[in-house]
Image (cartoon, rainbow, N blue to C red; front, side, top):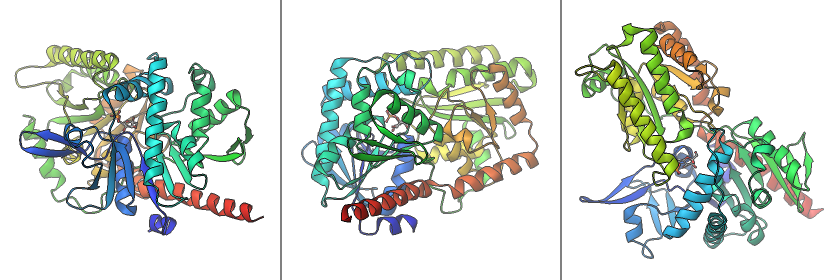
Length: 487
Ligand code: F6P
C-alpha cells in the first residue's frame, strides 16, 4: 500500500546488471532460472508490486539466441506484472565491464577480504561504454521527463550522472548493494573522481548501513570539491544535491503459511541426504565467492569435531554453493580451496555413509533452498565482509516453527539488525567452533526466544519498507525541488 501511495502515477524504471529471470536453452526447450543474487531477491518483489520496466543484461543462453527479436519480455512467467528489457552485451563488453572492472576491480576494492583489486584501462573503457549503453536504454525507455529511476549497484556508478544530463527532472535513486570502504582504501582507484562524480548524479544514494554512508561522505570530502552538510547527510556538487542515506535492505515476508509441516520437511530432507531422523544438520547458502567466508566456516566445523568428538557421525553440514563469476581465476582458485578442504575434513572425520560436509556446487531454486533452511538446526553466515546478507533473513523467514539458530558474521550489515543471532568474527576459528557447539546444544526455549525476536524484526522491516522509505524520501525531495523552482 505504501509503495502504491508513493508511486501513484509515477513511471518506475529499474536498472541492474543481473536480470531477475534468466532464459536458458535446454534439451527440453527454454527454461527460466532465478539467479542466486541478493539484489534480485530484494528488488523483484518490489517490481511485482509496482510494475514498470526493469532494464538488465540479457545473460542466459536462450536470451542470446533471441538477439534483436525480443528485447522485452513480460515477467514473471505465468503471472506477468512488469516488463523485462534486456540489453545485449558483446563478449568483450561483458569481459571488460562485468568480469574486469566491476568484479576484479570494484568488488575487491569495496570488500575487505584482502584480495587485491586489479585495475586495467581496457576494462575501465568497457565499463564507461556499457554504462553509456545502459544509460541510453534508460533514456529511451522513459516515457515522461521525470521518471523514478532505481539504479542498482556497483556495475552502474557512472550511469546516474549520464542519465541526469539527459533527464534533469528525473528522480534517480541509486542503491549500492555492497560495502563502501574508507577513503584511504577507495583512494587507490585510478578513476576515483569519475566514479564519485557519476554517483553524485543521483537524487538519493543509499547504502545498507550508516557506517557505509559515512565512509562515502568522507571519501567525497577527501577527493572532491563538494559542499557537505554532515547533519543533513547531503552533498552538493556541481549545483546538484544528493541525499546520502542508510536503507537496510530486506526480503519479502512470506505471505501464506507453508503447506508442509516443519516436521515432515525435517524427515524428508534427512532422508534425501541419507541421514537418520535425529541427525543434526547445518546449512550454508552462498555464491562461491571469496567474501563469503566458506573456508573459515569449514575450519570452524573441523575444529568443532576436534573439540567435540561426540559430534562426529551426529552432525553434517550442507553447503549450497552456487557457481559464480567462474571464468575469473580468483574464483576458480577459491572453488578449488573449498573443495580441497571439504575433502580433507570428510576424509578425516567421515566414514561409510557419513560425510561431515555435503558440498553441492550447483544452482538451486529458492523453493529447494527453503526446504533445507527449514530442516536445519543451524544456519551459518560467516561472510568476511558483506553489505547486508539476505541469506540470514531468508533463513529467519523460513522458520515458522520458531526453531533453528543463526550464526552470523559481525562483518555483515545484517549483524547490526539481528543481535539475537550468535554473532561471530569469522576469522576467529575457535570462536566459530564454540558458537556452532552452542547452537547445536541450545535448548528449544532459547531458540524460540531468539528466533521470535528476529522474525518480528524481519517481518516488520521487510523489503517493501526498504523501497517505501527510499521512495518517500524521494517524494519529499521532489516536492522541495518543485517549491524551490517556483521561488
Ligand atoms: O549483492 C551484490 C551482488 O553483486 C549483486 O549485485 C549481484 O546480483 C549478486 O551479488 C550476485 O552477483 P552476480 O550478479 O555477479 O552473479
